[in-house]
Image (cartoon, rainbow, N blue to C red; front, side):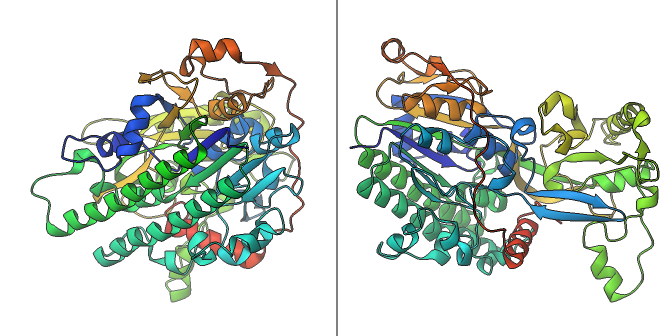
Length: 531
């Protein structure tokens, strides 16, 4: 038995960086094996979800469905209760639709899925193996399936759960503004962590030979958030100082190691394997901080209570919404990662918010105010795109989406703090998400040396099922990119549209412990997704 389909996820990977690292323009390429896959296979830009964020994007990839159907829009869910907003983390039980792991599993395919977010708690009836990502290491055992897998992994030489999962004590150094020393340590930290995931993938391929072997490396995203200026080809200069050169060298070591992992996995899978690689979104540079709630306050959409001039008052001011005046708040942004505006609607008389009958007119006024949010020097709109939720999140879960989805002119994430100025130039460019990620395929039946038009992230799930010889469910929004495959392969294995999915299969795991939630919330703050 051999692996039939190998999927390698690279969180945040972008051709902007990968093309430079696979090129020999400046000497030996950093990622020569990936470069060989480019030549031997097919590639395409991959358009992410409307908000190109880790949770909705990876869940869309894993389900073939858009957020309006699967229901995951952010890292956290928010609920208004009177004058408070309560937050709780999304997990696998919030996904309303079936994943490709479950679809393949119930049709007799053995699967292995490693480090994918929002797969905890895992389904207990999975035909295969799952080690979820986005889990603190102390909680890894109870979120791994089958039950004996964790103890088996401990037998792998140099296995370390602390390195494998998110070590929150170590990652406390990842703040929005790092010292030179801390930024260097931040990059070094991810080298051994990725090696742990590689070793588990290598072990399962050797010992279990799943039909679908899938592993995700997320260090790409984490490095680019903190070290984008050392990786973006457009930001390199012969005049760069010694520290810049050292940091770039360290970042290239990470990608050099990643290339060796890709080569080892593809080689171990064998010559008959179809290899697919994809990212949840791409990356680019953000050059400004946009304080969206401050702007909404200036336009009268929300109001703040006075902050007591005490240490406790100043500390509470740094928390989200501690001094928001809910009695005078109609619209606000809940999280930086959402890049969305929520309008408060009173569903019943006496509840806070505007009457439902005024919703459309209120939203149109809000859109006009956001369109008027402009750079005073150039007149350019700060918010480049404003989307109504029914236009970008249609589906049964649309009610959980922001009322308006924003795209900033530099693709950055908003700030929700009540601070001035409303728009502030960053001291140096920072990495942020771009809607175009990567989609790469190579192997038997895949066209060689071809670049096809942009695909949608939901297409990846459909493609992996097709590679396994399974029909694509009729309710999938994703489609198989047939131009990625040779005519001979399509003739021998035509795309088949099958029965719809069976719906989400609820995981049986325990509710996430409070300390686990607190640690993940802290991590999101440190990475800039929460404030």
